[in-house]
Length: 157
Image (cartoon, rainbow, N blue to C red; front, side, top):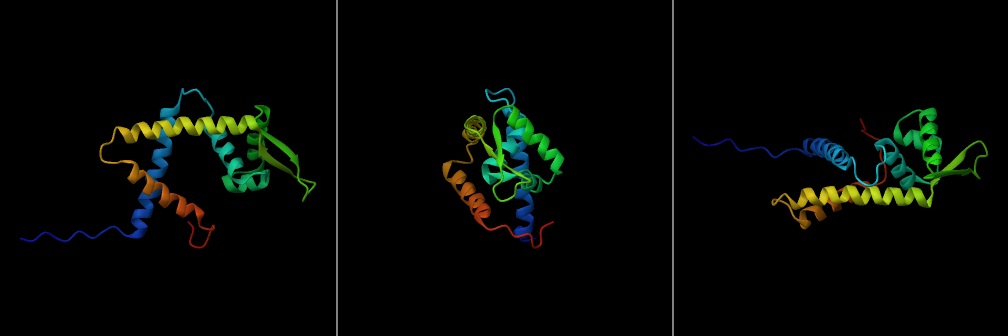
């Protein structure tokens, strides 16, 4: 009796798995990073990353990017400012708002947290004989390519 031919996964199925596994990987790295030298709450680290990516940026734009309310984002930005990791400056385009940017201290904290989390990923890769630097380079290239595309909200769920 012949074996049925396996149908390769569709682009949509593989895309769903990519979303699933990237989320799981980030959460696993976050769990493993607990207690490392740079002890930054996950929400503050995410906000530091967003300010780094988008800044100088308004609180409204950060709230939109994080899909939260403006008061919630204002509190998050205030916490970063109190720790000396971010600063607000008047927005020259709109006197009613401020622009948020990282301070040198915030950039240092973010760099160190990323370095520590990268070490967690590297340790996982070293312990997995099925994958090597070429596989990682391919994965990075694919993710970079996806992120380098302009945002397109058509068809977004």
